[in-house]
Length: 220
Length: 78
Image (cartoon, rainbow over all chains, first blue to last red):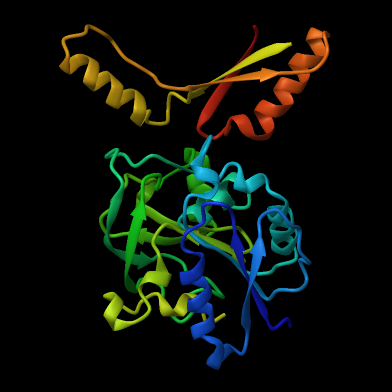
């Protein structure tokens, strides 16, 4: 098992340093070191034990959030890694990129209220993920910050049913800030190695940040 | 050869931009039934063969210019 964790960087990613430090903070328990991965370069899909796609505004959100990043060389390697079963976590813009890449179902569009939302939200764990936040019990609560303009998760009815039947809904909002279908805040692929959520766990690691519910997302 | 790609939000997906523009128009006394906001992309493609240009515009539209889950697209020769 590789001892490295890859943190993706696209032009316009802005939560990269926070995610990198969150992974570094977990080194005493995991022994795994984070390493930067640049959007323009392919990488060895076998070299990392987990991959993180941080939030931000990759490629300036041009065309659609995450659309251009999803077609970058680094994402071809992410796809290979995902197919090999490597755990991949997308946060906020990372979620948008994974949907645009087709590695997760559905799409993220402008918030129903038209406004950018910047707040703390209460979440409920619908189905546990074997890697990220694995210690949390199904049905348990978490409080995490959100900061997004395009966070409304949409999916066709049959797709939603598949998600629900397969236990691929990861987190739901207690009170949706963006009008997402079925209050969905995070989803997983069928194999559950690719997961993503709109809230930012890297912004809730220590009490001084306002909460610690994000820490379980980085000790992989 | 120039090909236009018209990308519009699907009817079943709430068109938030269209709704906002519609509300501004109404607030200013303009009469309208509805307003939809999409995107228009102009591709300047090499060669003079229209069928080839249309095929490559279709390829690009499906590769990245539209997301079939939330949008539809139409091509037109300009």
